[in-house]
Image (cartoon, rainbow, N blue to C red; front, side, top):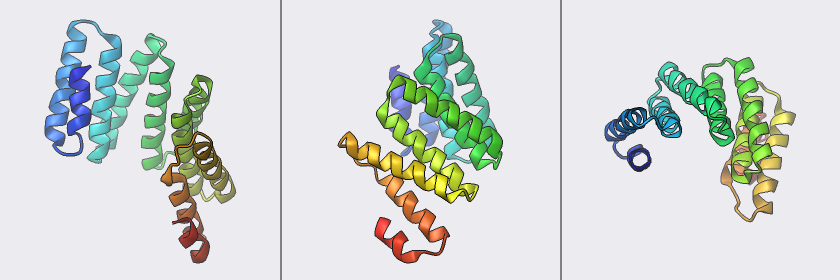
Length: 180
């Protein structure tokens, strides 16, 4: 757990060191048969490779993470892995798979009543719908995400920024500026 936390500390400032920590965490978790630690380590390696644009490698690690989380029936881990897998498919323009994984992730976060992650998953679904030029659906996801963030008293800027991006794509620069 400490090695995976060190990964998070270093991922933005020293990615090479961060990957080393994640690999050490994976080795130790494997050695002591800590399935949750193994899944977290694979997830972190996926994050590292996604950050560096190695999407196929990221997808491979996220899938390994998902398999382990499913084997131990860890719903939060399953939801997080599916969210990450959905985002990779979206980046790769594999929209059908992206939709499948993002919707499944959103349903699990909703079952878990994890409001912060529900907001993130709605934002991701909005991004996907925007990419598909399904602007009304995208706007609904972004609006719902923002309203939920207000409801819990923890306002997130991403949904507002994405609404601005949506209006910008449609050429309504005045509305876009208001949301930015």
